Amino acid sequence: MFKLSVLDKTSFFLVLLGALNWGTIGILNFNFIYFLVGGSPFILRIIYVLVFLSAIDLLYLLVKGNVIKVKS
Image 1 (spheres, rainbow, N blue to C red):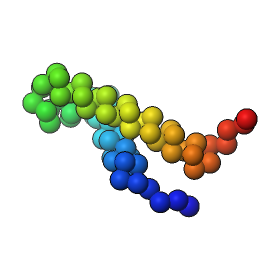
Image 2 (cartoon, rainbow, N blue to C red):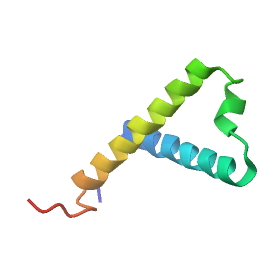
Image 3 (cartoon, one colour):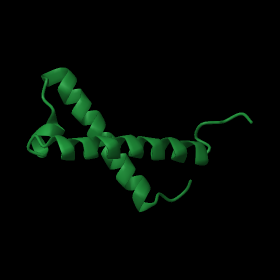
Image 4 (tube, rainbow, N blue to C red):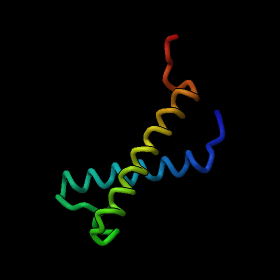
């Protein structure tokens, strides 16, 4: 087991938030993030980019932690 950094914990939170947002869009046709930021397209785009970068960080965390076995 390894210790999670603040960045990793933040990444988990943002990816979870993104997943919940996509779930509410699919089930209820309601964009929760759009509602939270008051419809500002610039802030909405920043949040989506942060969720994307967080997903990349979590993929790196999985590979680094040998959760996914990568053949060399």
